[in-house]
Image (tube, rainbow, N blue to C red; front, side):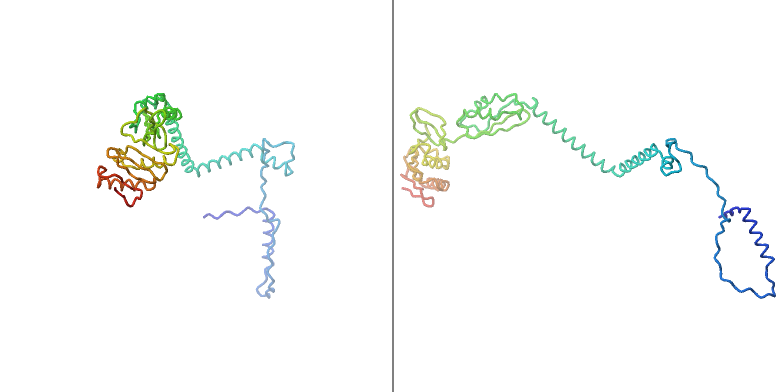
Length: 335
């Protein structure tokens, strides 16, 4: 490295240094003289005259936004002269801009993730709105009505009764209007609607199971286990048992007889020509052709009684039997 050049000395300091050096040469002690006693070292003092020259700097020019009425010698005037409102505003604006840039730089991943989530949510929302709009449009109008489960009823009659729903969008099918139309069919116990896009409406019905005929003033009324009148004829229908129930369809005896008839297998129910009950505990069945009676008793354990009766009838046909007594489900008495 290059050694820096020393600072220039002032003329006064140079002259003083030369005088001190001359006096030191003249006052050097002789060799034969005794050496002077040692003195305590004195710390060098700072000579005020040996200072570097002061170079005056140019006084700062007043800022254009400074107030000329303020005194530049005071603190208020000095601050106003140094920094103006416009410079402060610019510095604050630059700081805010730099801060926003840093925030954007450190949150770029979070903003991208948020944009992806917002895009996915918007896509799902648009898809749902488009689906709903298409579903409630004539594009999904009812053009075909299919009736499932009709056995005693004519499926075409049920579909014709619901023709008022043709042309309506599947989600807008009026269920109350459908119910009002199906009430006219007493044989329908329950129903359910099923939409099969784009144009088919399926009506699933469960028909009532008739258990026999009740003799009334109007003739013979076909009823189910709940006592609902299904139809009325002047003469009893062939193959349908006649019910002789004390107390009518609102009695406990009728409820027990209906439960017994619903528990019978199809092959035994087809042979029953009459049902009699005066109380819930003395239900009696009559088998046609042989006039064989089945003493059932109460409706309790009807499933087990029906199973034992079927086994006994297979071993002992009704043609050779006068009475089957299954009032006790564990033991079947044959007479």
